[in-house]
Amino acid sequence: MKNYMKTKFAIGCLVQWYECDIIEEYVDSLKDAISAYDGEVMADFTVITNEDLERCVSPTKKMECLEKIAHILLDFENVRFVKELHTIADYRKGFNDDYCSRADVLIWGESDAILPKQMFTVLDNLHQMSLQNNNPKYLAFFGTCKMWDDSWLPIEHNDFTDKPCIPEDYDNWWSLKYTMSKAEMNKINEKVDDLDVRIVSPHKFNGCGLVISSEVIKAGVNIPKSVFFVHEDSAFMYMTNKLLGNIPQYIIKNILLVHNRNHPEKRNYVQGEIGDTLNGLRRSNKWYVNANKMCEQNYLNMFNPNYKSYTWEDVWD
Image 1 (cartoon, rainbow, N blue to C red):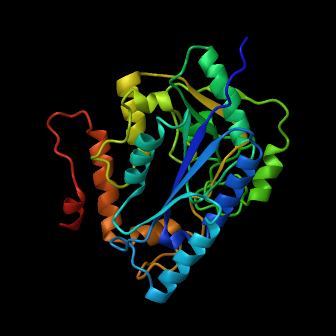
Image 2: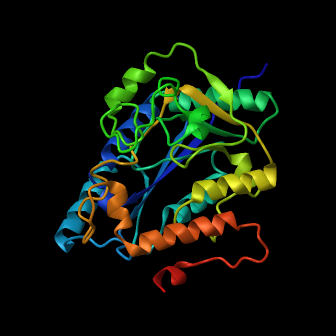
């Protein structure tokens, strides 16, 4: 049997200017994961300086935010600062296109994620196994926290599945809204001796930490242009199912990837927002409510020949 080449990875993350106080933990966990892997990892960052959607409380604070982010990202080569309106959907679509011919496997990073240090080593073994099984087109996901309802049980980490889902619970470590540290995640992951890898059918994932074999993108799957803001993960799943059917989605059930989706420092320094929670702050913006709903309708009607997609112009109108 000939020696295999180590899997080449690309991982990409969009960073908003106001995420300056949370991005460092993501970056630290990424550095840990890269250091633990003896293959090639291309890390990509796009930092958004645009204020069309969220305005900063002052020009001075905006400059401080950008300088802090630039300092945190000093060790990375593929970093760009973008002045135009550029959303998570725009970024991930471009990232997929740009890197599918340069890497074997793509990973969607996220500024409020904390990555397991075993990530690339585990995914290297998974990729080689999938190729040996004649499955070059596949998706993968790591175990996640307790989610909203039982439809998410197949991708919840083993330590979380028997825990209750308590609305507005910010205190229990398994909760959807709990903000977990890297040390807490490592303590959970260090208990693992043997991996629990399963296949999820039908597909179930969100965008934070989604793993995509590049062959999926080369086959034509990507985020449609009509999904211009959010719901890009659901749109990507719909496109995958439409073009490639129920290709394998692996879930590494006992390795946790943290998604601190309700991080209290995520939207610091945004002008004029009102609310006690992250979701409340976002939804105090009428444009956010409109764009969210319109993108949802766009992805739900992607294959409806009688449906005309909403655009940013409709949001502002």
